[in-house]
Image: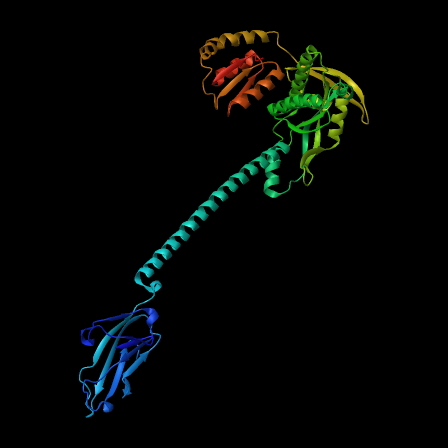
Amino acid sequence: ALDVRDEQAPLDLPPHMLNDLKISHRDNMITFEFANMEYSSRGQHEFQYQLIGFDPEPILAGRNNTAVYTNLDPGTYTFQVQGRNRDGVWSRVPATMQLTVLPPWWRTWWAYSLYFVLLAGSVLGYVFWQRWQRMRLERTVELRTRELSREKRRSEELLRNILPGGVANELRSAGRTEAKQYDRVSILFSDFQGFTGISEQLSPAELVDELNVCFKAFDRIMEKHGVEKIKTIGDAYMAAGGVPDPEKGGPLAVVRAALDMQEIMQERKAERTAQGRPHFEMRVGIHTGPVVAGVVGLKKFQYDIWGDTVNIASRIESSGAVGRVNISASTHAEISENPDLVFEARGRVMAKGKGELEMYFVSRRYSEHQGGDDERLERFLATGSAGNAGHADLDLRGSRILLVEDNDFNIMVAQDELQASIPDVRVDVAKNGREAVRMVREQEFDLVLMDVQ
């Protein structure tokens, strides 16, 4: 028999027939009782035992016939006991019993399997979570990168709108720009006559809208002729040819831009007069000479030009006449041989702060046969225009359009509408029939528009 927690637990079978004794981990205090099969002289019997798996070596118990074990760890043990009779002879074969202390449920094989599954699931979950976090971070970084790229493009576009392209690139790469000397720059000044009086007849919103219409038209003209817009000051508009690229916007280009400006103002005057609304009239002056150009400011960058040439150009403008383009002698010397221009010498005119300056009015020389060119163009394009009439639903994305129109204001409006409604469209302009015929012969166009309204 054996005691479990001081309670008798008799064996169901003899020890030699009992293969394995299993007890709970809660019953890990056990007492083995044993006896010698020789019943005579029991007081002279001695014993030795060993719980293999717990005792490192056999224990000589003397005449004590009990073995007590406490706090046995879960596992399998073998209890062996030998007896010695009064003659001092030990039993040849020890009596054995296998004892199994069952583990608690959390130390069973299925519990360990569950632990493994949970651990593997946790590891996989952590791996997937890390992957998800990385993917989310990558998406976030990608979105932020796109936003930064968009903002960078916007900033670069804004910088290009504020500064000339080459100057903007220099400022972006080096963080600063060097002022440069230019020996041959044509400076254009324009100013609205009687601006204060007209502004009193318009609401603030109407005044700003009208200025915006005019200045947008001027901006397009400068872009067309390769002239650099410098700034606007109130109702004054300032531009220069030959800066920052000396090869662009020479004196002839600046004069042509000024003539286009006056033509637009005449057309705008006719429209607003027909509507019974006040209109602007403008003076334009041009002078050519040396200047220094560069970027000023720390936060609000501005590309500007300095020098006595600027002051003289301003005086040439203020000494001019409404609806005319007034130029200095230096500008006249640069373009006097051009056959498309007509010059009216004004002699020496008193300019405030500059004394007497030689000045000239300049205008275009119009051909008497210009209208015939328009008629020839219409005949030349009649077949193609009629053929395209039934294909108004064609996709014009990225197309190239030739706009044949001599009204500068209509050109400006048509270009705005076409570029706003057709992605990646390219609009070329011909001011008369002769120019349009030449362009059609030299290049291919997807669409030709004439006399837009």
